[in-house]
Image (tube, rainbow, N blue to C red):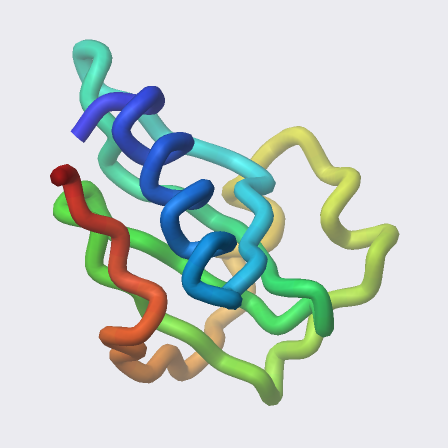
Length: 92
């Protein structure tokens, strides 16, 4: 998936009532490999390159933590993520 695909998918999620924000993207040759983001409650959300979402509401982020430019800072902490199909992003 491309960055544009993810941005369009985020708009589609918002239209469905799930407002999400992307904080950092890891790219490889123009394709998204990993996206770190959050929702309005600052719950951690991670998407893989296929658009599958994984969440952990116990890893509630502080606003200050979202300001790190290096996504490895947050992902370096070990969080147990659960699959969350409701937040998957799809190309239509």
